[in-house]
Length: 343
Ligand code: NAI
Image (tube, rainbow, N blue to C red; front, side, top):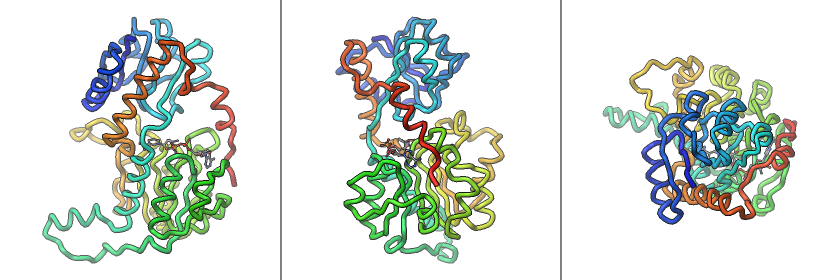
């Protein structure tokens, strides 16, 4: 099929083109993000292939549909940026890549914990500057500490497995219990208990109305002083102003983010020659106990190969009218969206 690929980076075309040798779709790569202004680029294409920061609101979807687009083939797992009511009304199909390498995100999550704990980001700069002083680099043994994992799906369960290997006590919270993590000795508890008992808290649940600002001032107040918070899921799970206040008061002792609630237009771009206009983000960058990576949790060779292959297979399945497992329907999403912010 003819596919308009938006938000193309060199690595996008590299992996999609390599995988496409097996599929033979006609891929057109466009660098701009999909927006109302750029939607016209998809004219004459039955398929668009957007990424996480492309705009898929009702206005853009109407433009795409008018131009002949029938399939939105997301090359990512998350679909919180797609107006599914609009795609439903417009008769468009939305497909995604539900899993490509949960290991990639789980390993990055634990990497961030280790870097924060042992202050590797500071040590690296110090040693390169000829400063071999250890003062200020004191860490703690993860072994024996308590980890709180919110969301025990594919990624969260792997984080549980890795942290279990460190000898941590594991508390978990998820409306759907996963027997694999119970088998590892993890204990399902209410969020309030997870907050109160954990030394390290990491988020692996989706962004839905019930989880927006899950970590707000009220949640932070229930946590241990000096707790470590890691978010590699979706930025809006965390109320950024609330965590800034908690960092200032030392309630939060460490924080790592791979996602940020206002990351569109920021992450994935090289803005190094420009003035940073987001004052909230700029404030986050001033804390020595904060590490931010720009949504790179998924970014491993294995994951990129899997994303490319599944995206192209989805398009082939759609073309051939086969039973489609990776379709996102309103019916599939509603039960999750209804999940309320649990106590
Ligand atoms: P998954 O669907 O396998 O697991 C999500 C889990 O969250 C499910 O077990 C679900 O029951 C649970 N959940 C739903 N509502 C909850 C709530 N209110 N409280 C606690 N748990 C809740 O998803 P997967 O693959 O593990 O991904 C997790 C998140 O990671 C995704 O939602 C996505 O936002 C993020 N992600 C980040 C990437 C990155 O590059 N940083 C890449 C891929 C995913």
